[in-house]
Length: 81
Image 1 (cartoon, one colour):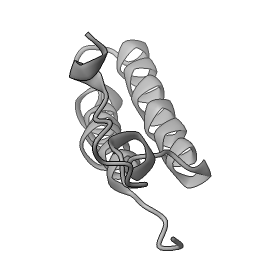
Image 2 (spheres, one colour):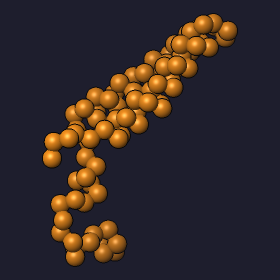
Image 3 (cartoon, rainbow, N blue to C red):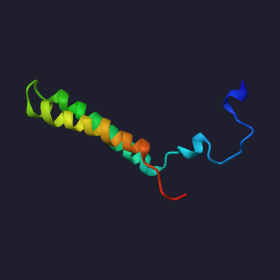
């Protein structure tokens, strides 16, 4: 069973978990994206059905959080090796 998860033949330092490690900027970007999503749902819930904030501001915040900031947090890598 352990042979399924470990490759003992190659002892390189570029394993999956070492090449995709989160650093402080990743966590900050992810927290900003999560905050945008939470605030977007809060703004949507507090507005009336046809209000400007429910139909315009909240979807823009949700789109920015889900489609731009959270994927950027997952993709971003430090250039220092």
